[in-house]
Length: 169
Image: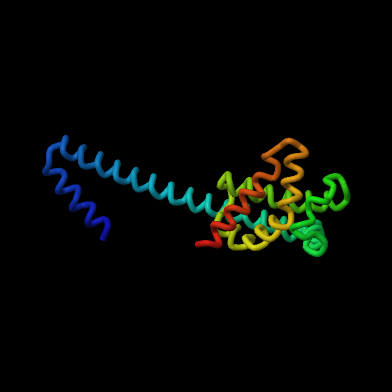
């Protein structure tokens, strides 16, 4: 069938002048090139989406890590939102807080850089992020003042803000 269509097209084109035939083939070649470009862009988007999903799941795995879980459990059981500013940054308790905060900090940085999927990470971690921030907020405020660094744990705070916005949707 394709061959018969091709033969009819060639016969039709042989009746036309050469310039018109060249123009028609040029237009067809350009259309084919545009279609290939669109398909390539769609393929690259799919690959990027897969990479973002993979990285998002790797970030989520950090929240299931034994060190994170045990440190977070300790925070949940031993710290109230009112008492976290009483903890010394360099103490064993402060080390547990830093272990937890750094995981939230990394997730927030990747989210801000749009390297991970916002919908997926926030659907999995919104509650945990908000509740942990509320427990550690006074500790973080105290350390920002002590270290004279208002950007300390900034990405953690960004993640918390995004989690609150996500929950409103």
